[in-house]
Length: 502
Image (tube, rainbow, N blue to C red):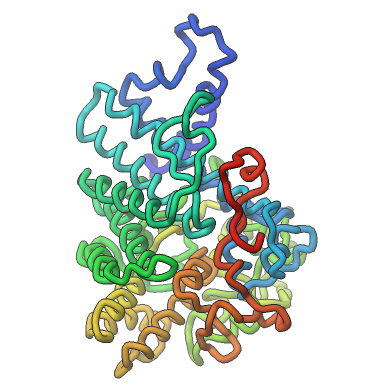
């Protein structure tokens, strides 16, 4: 725990280092106490602080308040979420299929992810020059390579053709106004970075929250699985995705939690089912998505901000199979809760809110959440493995059934059996929608499948032409397969071409 909290503290103050670098032009160049990118990277501590700074852009993505939160963009794009937050314009742009390039959520994803890439590039350039322990050096470079791959993976899926920048830049750099690259070129870079990160020999698990071999292999499996689907359709990557997922499974380092309560218990962070997470610590760098998942001003929480930012549509919360434990009260969702003023009394919330992200102690007492934000967990790996095996072969193998049935057993559902390749495909996809709901996974799946989930009849249907239950007269088009490049980027870099339809 001490190591974990030290990482959080370092990330929380890393902006100071970034500021000294950014402001170096305003300082006296002959003052030896001032840092520049050329003078800063001289010892191991500098390598560590530089790499810690690459973690930091993960944090603002989850920040939530009365303007909503960046992470909500990917949930409202599924059509499975609703809101009571009337003033969050960015939500309605996505939710009501009227999105445009002024959406602040897309701008935040773009800026934070490119900030992470910029910091990764600097670390990859400068750390090899530092005289330090070689094993430690390779670990830090591997972390930087992992993050450059992770951030590009998010950008290429959300925005399509995005610029590739692989070196640090200044006002004289040729890459100051870069042109866009094809998704194929971006995936080539991602795969190259992950291949190099693998070779550093990181431990399979790191309970301090740092990048581990488990995180690298899981991201690799996700990359291969995604590239096998749309738009690239590199189907030869299905067996590669299965192989990477199997390495994670065979490591024996990860397991499903016994209960769903453990998914939102601060005591379980970086352990058990969790493979990689955004790190938070109460009273240091508190997790700040709780206000978004609280009903609007019903008085159930110690938080002063209770925004009603996001909850499940009734149709989606009702779409789980009969007797599915995940759909029962206070498992994945909750519809009533005790009042902050009197915990012996309770109120009906009026909708299914998201309990799997709910920090009980913070809401009932401290208003300082100690929960981490999950990026990858073992259930995701099992479902990736099952899906990839089914697509790589002529149909579902015993191993594919066993993987998905672990998820179903915990949900107290009967095993899947006797399915064809086509029926297993739909079953495992729907299992992903239900198991990984509201974890920023479903929209990415919809885009690579070119399928959307219809919660009314529990089926998958073509993405283009699909209608949301609350918006029956307006259908998804090809436009919604990508988000718009932010207006500020289009204005600042005239080499960029906007995505079609925006």
